[in-house]
Amino acid sequence: MIETPSAGGFQFDLAVPQDARKTLAMAWLALGLAALLASGLFSILLVLSRTPQLQTLFPVADFFRVALVVHVDLSVLVWFLAFGGALWTLGGTTRWQPLAWLAFLLAALGTLAMCVAPFAQTATPVMANYVPVLDGSVFLSGLALFGAGIALLCLRSMLAAAPVGVHISGHGALRFGLNAAMVATAIAVLAFAWTWLALPRALDPRAYYELLFWGGGHALQFAYTLLMLIGWIWLASSLGSRLRLSPRVVTLLFGIALIAVFLTPIIYLAYDVASVEHHRLQTLLMRYGGGLVIGPIALAVIWSIWPLARLTPAARPLRSSLIASLLLFCAGGMIGFMISGSNVRIPAHYHGCIVGVTLAMMGMVYRLLPQLGFAAPASRAAAWQPAIYGAGQLMHIVGLVWSGGYGVQRKVAGSEQVLRSAQEVWGMGLMGLGGLVAIVGGIMFLLIVLRSLRQANRNRP
Image (cartoon, rainbow, N blue to C red; front, side, top):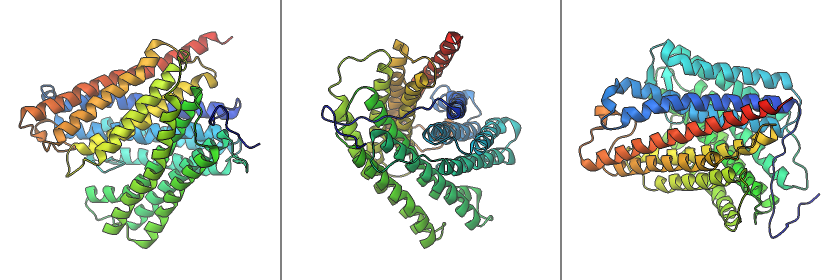
């Protein structure tokens, strides 16, 4: 049936099936949360290694870079795609379950290998954009295993995709968005494989890995952004809001992003992977293809939640996550226009955007828990957690922007930062303080989720 507007707008929802898909989705969610926990441990060391007065406690140069590699890959690559795996599992059918579990097993083994790699083998950290690596057999094998698991996840999700339907409802529009994010991830995997086959192995490791992950990394940004936009719409509807965008318009916007992703193979066909044109067109594709979609949805969501009345305790964490996500993502986007040169304004830009995605996913976890059979987070701590995490991250990126204005370089720490003035020290000090506050918010999130799981287990017969 065609969805009609009610009370001046439309509502959207994601159904959570109570069958074999639920168990598999919980497994992917557990993998994502475990990666987030491990990345948090590495982030503590990262923040301390860049904070004035504390950085001398660490063997900074190699220590900082090794910790940064593992932190980024766990908190972005594994967390985002594992959470995507949970949503794609819930949004599909029950077909091809053995393949689905094989995909999860490969991804879990790969994640474990990446976590233990810094302690199992001495390897050179390579700070490539999108997917930094430790250039050693243990880490690279783990990364390859995780990639194989995600490739199988995408293949199985395509084989088990549920039909959206001719008459698109709010549920169908979000399911189309999930499918679009999954296809973007599949194209990213293909781009990685294409580049790997095309690149000469004799390149310097830094140039090799930068080129290897450039095209696929841009495609992954579309997948992450689509998952975040789904979260914004779902969380707003979960608060009782009604969006002024119809399901058909939302589906069209998701389709625009998907069309932009489909241009990725055309760029690969037209230009060599090591060419300047290839590099530039991938950047332009992400800038304009994604930008066309984010603005209308963000404005519609903000408009819908503005007049909301008092909420129930279970809804307050959802609103807090949504507002914090919107704020951080928009801040990261605006900082992107301030970038000039290679300084810490660049990580300020992508920290804001990435944290915006993470906060949307945190809100979706809070929304999913009661639907998966666990207790709904409804405490004051749950309502404050996104605000604390978001405020810490905002302080973090403001400190980076401040320091970047004085030329502090990215991807360095300790004495390599060359903090010459009091303003540079204060800026990086604010960055460190914000990072520590964000870590507290991250720990709160994990504790709140664990409490929800334990409460549900105690209530079961």
